[in-house]
Amino acid sequence: MDQYFLSRVRRMIDSIGKKEIYEGIIISDERKDKELKWDHRTINHSTFAKVSFKESTLSNCNFSLSVFIDCYFKKTSLENINFVGCKFINCTFDNIKLVQCDIRFTVFENCYIEYDEVKNCLPAQSNIRWKMCTNLALESLRAGDSENYRKFFFEEKSACEEHYLGMLLQKEKYYKQKYDTIDRIVGLIKYINSQISKLIWGYGERIQNLVVVIFFILLIFAICYNMQDSVFKEANSSQAIAKKLNFSESLYLSFCNFLTITSDFTSINPFVRTITVIEGTFGVVLMGFFVAALFRFINRR
Figure 1 (cartoon, rainbow, N blue to C red):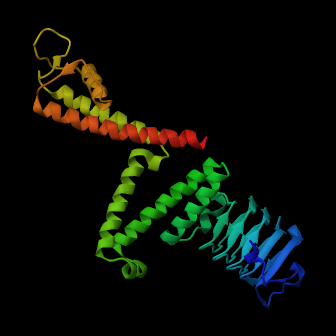
Figure 2: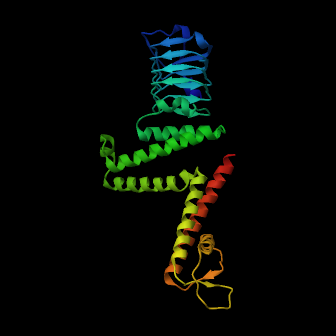
Figure 3: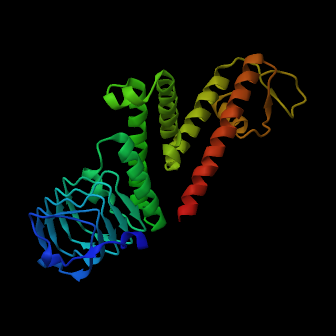
């Protein structure tokens, strides 16, 4: 933490004028609150420590590459502020107003801004937005705010997929210069994998998606069994007569095969034996997903 204070000159809030450009200064232990109404101030590569911005109004200011430590932002109005490369450490944000602020490459440590307050200022560039949302999601989770964690998490995944598409399509100059043909293939694979994860279980955050997928697979395989002719035998029956399953029996067989447990019906039909193995494989994989999603849900609680 000392690196944010060494070789920096302390200045008072009232001494900061419009026309000057300030660099390498420290503003600390001040509480102007709603009396502070800054417009067109430039303070770069500086440190704000234990400063209260409660109900302050800041507009058209440039704070790039600055550090905010233990600062208090409550009902603060921030309009057209340059926070590029800034770092917020142990700050408090409560019901702030962010309008057209540039927060690219900003880092949060032991603090975060709520998703609904910052979403309109998130960077348009997918690779930058992705990293920022990862940072904010982790800080939200660390604070026990699962609601904002999920919002940032899904925004992060959306940015990831947008980035993968950028790698694949290479419509922008940035992607053309940085990624080659192999990277385009990697981008396609990652995008497809992400879409499958989204569909199956909402990236591990939506158990209900997984339940729907499991039910759908059980139903599809039950229909397959029900469509077969008399190729099934009752395992515990002394009679060797093959039979056709009704739908309830087919659903029961599908459920047993999905969970890889023994059922009352067997078959030597090659097609039936093949789809039984396929359904069992689906069951092992999807039940693994289900246990993982359930663990994540309980662990956050």
